Amino acid sequence: MPQYKAPLRDMQFVLHELLNAEEHYAKLPAFQENVSRELVDQYLEAAADFCENELSPLNQIGDREGCTWNDGVVTTPTGFKEAYQKYIELGFPSLAAEEAYGGQALPNSLGIVISEMVGSANWAWGMYPGLSHGAVRTLEHHGSAQQKDTYLPKLVSGEWTGTMCLTESHAGSDLGIIRTKAEPNADGSYAISGEKIFISAGEHDMADNIVHIVLARLPDAPKGTKGISLFIVPKYLVNEDGSIGERNGVRCGSIEHKMGIHGNATCVLNFDRATGYLIGPENRGLNCMFTFMNTARIGTAVQGLAASESSFQGALSYAKDRLAMRSLSSPKAPQKEADPIIVHPAVRNMLLTQKAFAEGGRALVYLLALYADIVEKGADEEERKFADNILSLLTPIGKAFLTETGYEAANKGVQVFGGHGFIAEHGMEQIVRDTRIACLYEGTTEIQALDLLGRKVLQTQGAMLRDFTKMIHKFVEAHKDNSAMKEFIEPLAAVNKEWGDITMQIGMRAMQNPDEVGAAAVDYLYYAGYVTLAYLWARMAQVALSKLEEGSSDVDFYNAKVTTARFYFQKILPRVRSHVDVLSTGVESLMSLEAEHFAF
Image 1 (tube, rainbow, N blue to C red):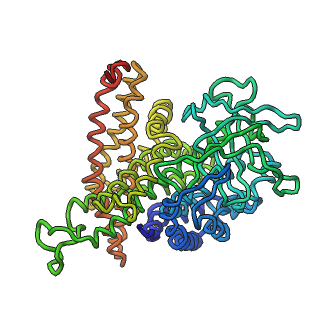
Image 2 (image 1 turned 135 degrees about the vertical axis):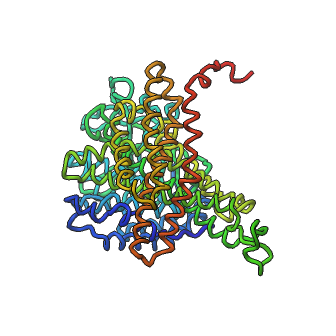
Image 3 (image 1 turned 120 degrees about the horizontal axis):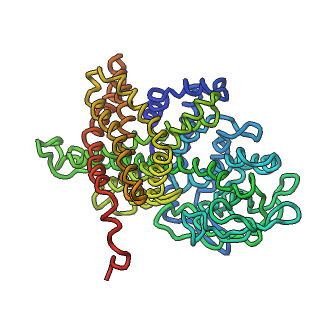
């Protein structure tokens, strides 16, 4: 099993050298007095120690043992509960929460960076505290004063955990057709009845209480998404003094038997007139839930990044040691019976693809996290609006593109190992199985693609897209006369212009046939993802070249950055050509075959 090693040097490069996080925090009133580079690095080092020494050793144990269900009670794998208690003791659950409820009031972006380490070390474990962050943020933004006082202190401390209960067996991602009911009680609470499925961490033995955030319908609510309300439904009711009271009417009917993430309990939850409390206005539940879902989508992008990083680490270590065949040019280890496979171009191609996706994905996730800081804590309304537009555009790209590339990287990790990659003891096939779900939950790749092209681009008449492509254009203009950057700037300028042209062509076709949007969306998202990472890789190359020109002693690190950027532009970015070709063909071949003729 790969032993996770936190890539602290690269994390610090992205935060401090590429994105200037310390300067970013200094501009936000909430953080300018208490967040320094030194503080950030201290948290990263503490998280690295915890993830490397506590979580990584449990990763394969969790996969092998899985969770067990017995009459509604779920037991987590060996060591999970103890690791969670250490996580609480280190103060990680309270990192970004408000001080009024026991939080440390540090940036949520710092929490995102730490969540990358947690997810890379043990994704199944990380889902237990990970979902709590969304519950905390939902209550912070939309809960009443009494609800905050009742639930936030325990959620913030980590003594209680949270979930999001959205979908039902007949609904999937179409939340407009959910059937869970909420009937008013005389005391102002509601009786919640229905069944929710695919509830990650919906039942477990790691915390004293679980606070479910549940979507349900009030009597006579409008049909569709406009008739959904949001409720707090705790596993145990809470007494007036804050102590745990009687068991509520929500129970785990079963846990799913899954392809991966065996260490996390994916539950069917049955609500039998369970006591719930309305969050926010009636019939505005989805609006409130978006606070939760946007956080969750960035968190899912982190899983794609984590898969790329963990599979790369395992594959790189193996490729340096595994001997097979001789180099085509000449023996590289003549004293050995064969050369290490890392000398072979085909293996290097796989390793560099993993590296490019991991480090490029890290830059994108951290960029998203910093924009989210501005949206939440920015002092200037115009800056908040701009950040919100960029975040809205890039979140579906981050969620869908990074999970798809993470899955690709995980498969390449198995391929580097050859037959050994298919064997469970090496842990590479577990990464593939654990990662596959990331392309599905929080909205599949196809749904994210429709969100990007349909809602974020075409419905805004390209305004959100222009905000981002202008950023790329400004970077291109700033460095177009730098000969060392020519190999990055010229292709980046070309695809940035092409992005706008492609969008206009799709928009024109969609005016004649709306199905053109659905036909183009996935290829459009891939195109957007490759261009977005190209922009970030060009920026990373520029920083690295500047450091080398200044005479930095960290020559190997910066040279590797430039070399990986060159690989990305020469070997990965050309993939956009196939997507452009597909986008030019339109919808006809997809829709001309009648459904009854698909098979005979």
